[in-house]
Image (cartoon, rainbow, N blue to C red; front, top):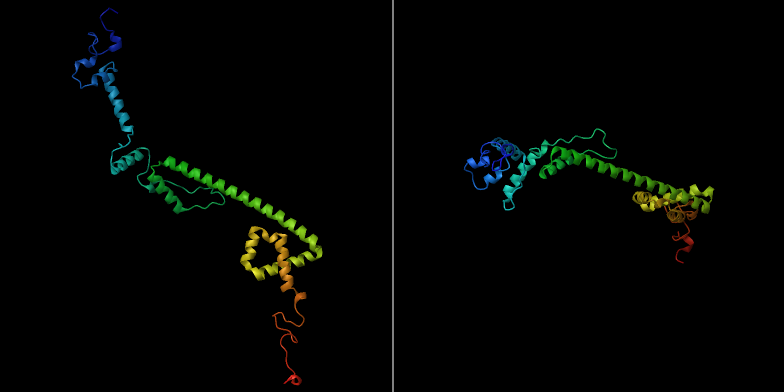
Length: 254
């Protein structure tokens, strides 16, 4: 390369022979020449501008901080649309799973509510799909944990029941166990009612030896045949010769 000349292979285009950049031939605004300096030729600059137009068409700019709430909402709506949000909440597609997990029930009302929420926060359809899949898996996990807890509770109650039976059989004897237990259950139903029976059964206290013995004692004192006063009916009639006396003619005036 001869000293004082410019390598045309580096600059190319107009002005290469003079050592000036091709943009020097045009009247440009302030700062524009510096921006064009990175382009080796007019063709490069035009191609760069075309690429910039494409990029701007796909770009996203957030609303300015000092914009009004209405303008911010409008701009965010445009952004959400570019990101793939349906025009309306009803535009989301949520289908009921074919293999709905046992213990879960599908709700059209809940699906509609999720669509509204997703539209408000600008979710796209793929994001909605991910959200629904996540929620189903989350609920499946909850159902499995609940089943495991119920099974553990049932095992515990069965163990407690077996222990209670062994304790009462040892105290009452094998031959009396079923009879005494039946009496305790009768007393529980008579004095506590169905609500108490269900509550004791649900809590596991129904199998507790202390409760069984307590209701057996109530049964024995109030309901068992060997504790009904002689001559008294099952309705609780007052026995003759007791508190109320039929005065005989001989006793009149005495």
